[in-house]
Length: 144
Image (cartoon, rainbow, N blue to C red):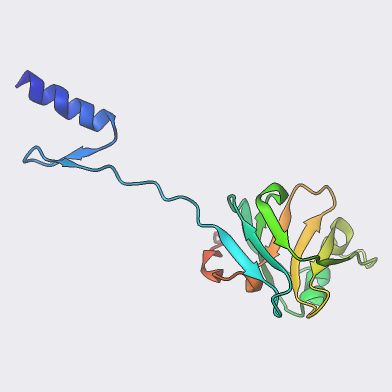
């Protein structure tokens, strides 16, 4: 009996579960974050993210609306060190003074014009426009 109790405690301590019939059930595996990938419309610029999404939301400032042609821009934020870009996006800095125009720079494909990213002035974060993701289902912002 004492051995059975010690075995049960060891299994629980290691993260597994034990059924009533004393058979061990494997601990659920932690899911690795899914790698994000995406591209512009013509495929000249591609990217992959090997790191977590640190924020996801919408922006409806005048700068975002004008840059993307949409009313509410969905984006995911990642750390620049986790983002690998293939191809050379062009940058655009608007003098408009609108919120995102004043605080960052737009990155887009020089061939097809797709707006892919917005980078804040301090370079600490990079926003990826959700429409360019290969799997946009990763975009699940919290309700405010």
